[in-house]
Length: 135
Image 1 (cartoon, rainbow, N blue to C red):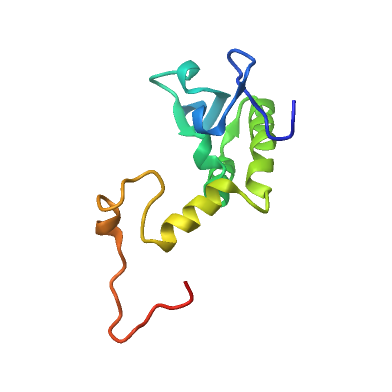
Image 2: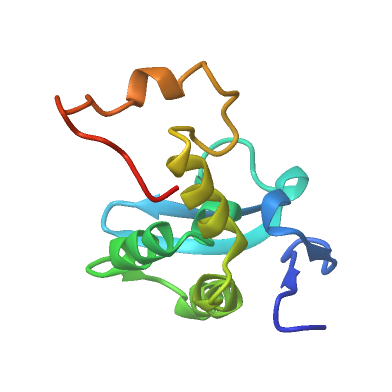
């Protein structure tokens, strides 16, 4: 097992961040049942969930961790294990997810969205007289 292996809590096999889901159950102000699984093993309905690929982006990772503050975590060990497993992806100097996001943004696109579809609606308004350079 390497530093970048994610282990499915359901089957015990390694899973790719592109195929992994983090799920948990929310009851009032408490959260429980945190699990990192293959998408095929994740509960379909009921619990909250987020794709692990999104949690490899620094801002999404921080938002996920920050959202857990102030919540009562019934059993914190699974959550700690998930955060520890995802941290090496986030802390890499060459984080592939972040690099892809930056590359796509530099062309006015969104990662995973076919060029010319949703990206057109999200383009920033050009400022009159502004010239883009350095690319």
